Length: 277
Image (cartoon, rainbow, N blue to C red; front, side, top):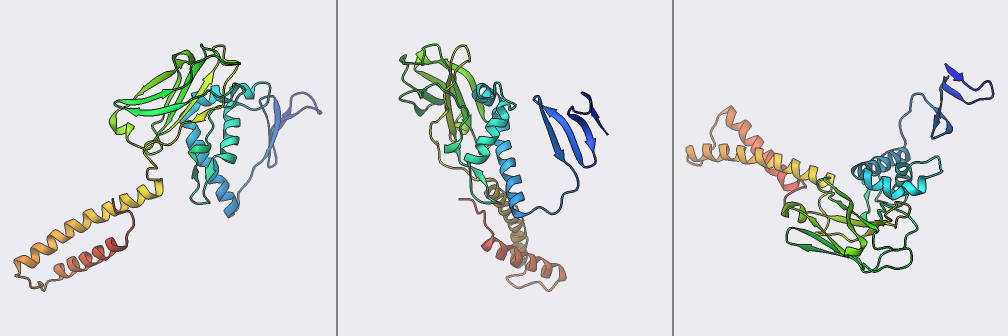
C-alpha cells in the first residue's frame, strides 16, 4: 500500500502493484519491481560494468567524497553517484565477460582549479616521492592541500592520503614496504583549496611496475598449482612402486588406478593454462 502524505496530488510513498514510490534527495522516484527473466548479454555486460566500477570506488570513498562533492552541491546527486556515472562510461575497457578498469582514464576528482605543473613520481628506497611546481599562480595558492591516491589492483589494499602535504612544499613522500612498492601501482594526485571550495581534476601519474595478473589469470594459476601438487604426489608414489618392482609394472588393481591418474594428470598439466613464469 502506498500513502499520499500530501493529498491526492502529492507524491506517493510505498508500493502500488509492481511499482514502488519513494523520495531520493528530495526527488520523487518510482521503480518497477517483479521477477526478472533470463538476462540478455547486454544486461550481463551492464551488471559487470557496475560491479567493476563499484569495486573500484568503494576502496576510495574519502577521496571521491572530496573530489566530486563540489559538483554534487545543489543537485539531486551525491558524490558517489557522479563518480559512478563517470567511471562506468569513461574508465572501463574490454568486452563482457572480460570488462576491467582502464586506470589511465580514472578520474578521482573533477573541478575548476587549474592543473599543477611539473608533476612527477619516483620510486625511492622505502616508498614513493611525488614532486610538483610549488609556485603560486592564478587560482593556485601555497596553502592548497595535496591529496594522493595509491591504487594497488593486485591486492586491493589501496591507500588514501587526503591531506598529505601543502602545495608550498613541492613534494611528498609515501612510505611503503618493498612488497607493496614492487607490485602494480596506479597513483593519482589532486589539489584542493584550504577552504574546500575548489578542487582540481585528478592527474594520473602513470603505472609503476607494469600490470599484474587479473582475477582470471590468478584463478588459472591457482588451478594449475593445485593440479601440479596432486601430480607431484601421484608421481612420487608411481615412481616408488616402479623402482620397488625393478621397472616392471605391478599387476595390482591399485597400481592400475594409480597409473591411470598419473597419466591423466600429466596430460592435463601439458594443456592447463596458468603455469607460473
